[in-house]
Image (cartoon, rainbow, N blue to C red; front, side, top):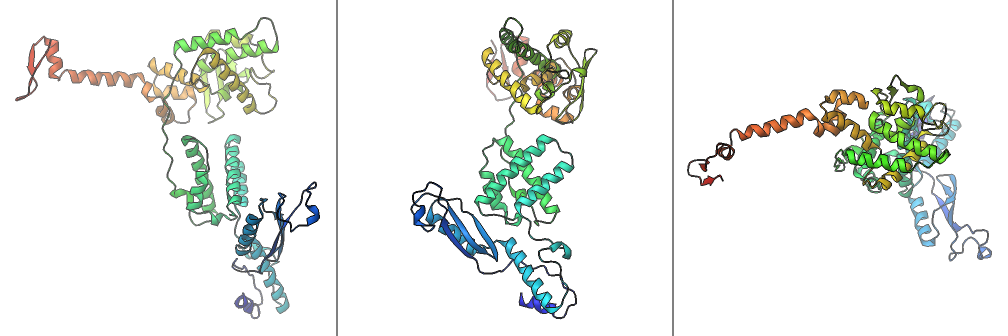
Length: 446
């Protein structure tokens, strides 16, 4: 620092951005912060044998520190204090060093940026993990990302902050590949959910690289978890009849709120089955979206337009259904839509149990809708439009095994091999024996 200060003696204007490599020697003290009813309060703050929380007090890089150490164990608290004394608060050292240079420059009559204001020099101190997370969320909201997507980023960043605090990590630069790998090890998600979370984490670090907070993304070197896609499993005709029968039995006699909800549940099942909507789109579907027996709306997930005809019996059921509000069939319009969706998912779960359906969930109605179209020969491209997928590749990834044309082509390929198979030809011609090839054993056909 002395070499930097010497420059102030000759330069008429100096803007100094110190490196966080030094600072005043920290002086910290651990003490018991006795609770109100602790019997050892008269023993003082140095008493070690009670179970009151341990706090730290003192100065760190010239900055006053007073906070909880997050432990009640005295020995552990002492270890934490020693770590704090050896691992300085870099941000505090940064600001304190700049203040010292500013004071020295003032003594020498030099111009200098205001203490603590690095923006005047065009530089920026090391950004903390919390600041980086907040800036990413702000950018996501400015880009008008879906509220559910922003919520998932907030959840990820809350877990990242907790991990960083437990590991005494403050700055983004302290997150290397090893730290990110340990952070992933704390996740309790399934493989598919973990893959999606890893993709969000990579987006965060790409944002950090673009802003030059780090030189490279530590998450880029992490391998993806192994994901096994669950096969599409539509409801059979028998299962659909069992579900509708169970829904009918749940409707009590007379008119009441419980009876109205039971009627709405049955109609919701029919709407999910014959429209192919996701449950969020079905619950949030406005009544004016149904006209001339056709349902027109934009999906919440992809924003794509869906235009689907409904069978006459479903249109009549929707028309006679007591609506939950003036605008919606299944939602009052008050509160969050996702809360209403969670309520209907709970009712469907109970309905599946009553019907004896194993592994039932709302999305299987959508699968049933798509598979019924494909087995009737509807091209995959048209099914993609009806499902509201943003790309036909999404439809192909989930439903390609059910494409009728592909099934028939595969069966035809198998049958063509029989025309050149000696055993099959012999059986078809009634030959008693046939030699497959010279020198081979004779195969007898009975």
